[in-house]
Amino acid sequence: MNQVNEKIDTKSASCREMDASELMDLLRSSGAIMMSWGSHNYTVDKMKGTKMFRMNVQGHHHKGHVYIFLNGLDLFDVYLTTFQGTIKDRTDEMGLYFDQLVDWIDEKVERIPEYKR
Image (tube, one colour):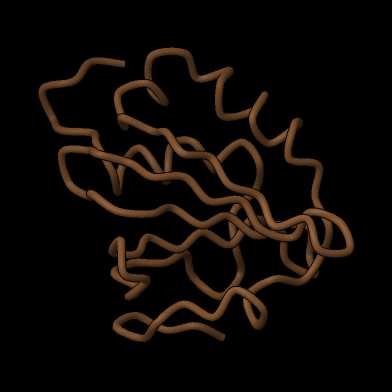
């Protein structure tokens, strides 16, 4: 498993295929939250099905890449990396449920106490 301060290895991080359009729908359903990340340059790895989703972000706390993978428990593994691929933060070993994904990313990339929900 990829660890903080290592270079991300997308082959070892990927596990299950995911539907990138459903993932984008989930992220976009947050409305202004996803837009506040300054997200752009969406990339998917389609070798034998989509196993990796990556976006660039320009948030208040994190500027770099956000990688999203679907693990063997059907939970999301998320890695925040520099633009050079060094892991700065990641989800715990268990992963995130779909309803936790946007909040976790927002907390790490953009949210500050002054923002109201």
